[in-house]
Image (cartoon, rainbow, N blue to C red; front, top):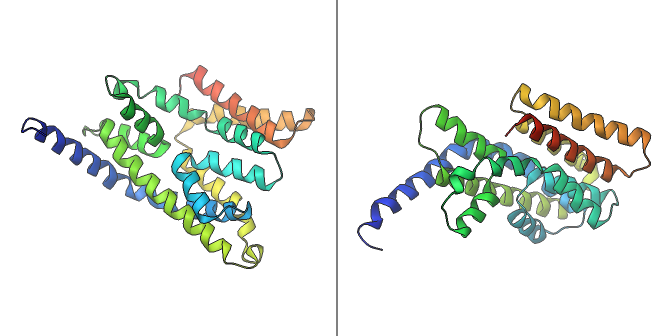
Amino acid sequence: MTLQDLPQSSTVRSRLAAGLRDILPLAIGVGVYGLAFGLLAAQARMSGLQTGIMGTIVFAGSSQIIAVERLVAGAGAGAALLAGLALNLRLLLITASLRDEFAGRPWWQVLLGVHLATDENWALMHAMRARGGCAGYWYLVGGGLGLVAVWVLSTVAGATFAAVVPEPKSLGMDFAFTAAFIAILRSLWSGNAMLLPWAGSILIVLLADRFTPLDPTWTLILGGLGGAAIAGVMGND
């Protein structure tokens, strides 16, 4: 490293630290439904190690929860994977909105930013900018690193705890999926702009369930695709 590199390195570190610091209050909520997901993962016979690896590689709370829930419900691995992907299609809109932050960066930084982009650190970055603060790529990455650390630790803790409980249902752990998904939905709500995509997605699921012979997994996939399409047409990030 040359002397000329020091100021830039210092700036990167300070913005990473700022993103990590500012995300901590939101990370507490992530940790709560991370524990719930760990309990659900244990019902799917996933070990703490498997849960941690999944959280690190996938790192998509709602997508992981719906995929594992479908496995617990008896759906095949392919259907569970598609359901998880459909539910997280909104991340395509989020990452597309970050094109200015990714412009001119090496491929590994783009991949890192895409992997760590979530509803929470994306919204926090824009909130900081709205207040006149300096928040860009490294601020986003700092927040993402904080979230992924809390998510992996909490999911592993939940799965490990459930594995040593002889009768999880006696403690109400079978409600883990519902509780976790409610928490995630609440965290995703960002105002009235979300109303139409959410309503459209719910309506599609209800109609498909009522008038088609599709398995619930596929109705969820249709709902996710429909909601993402509505949000895209409306121009919602």
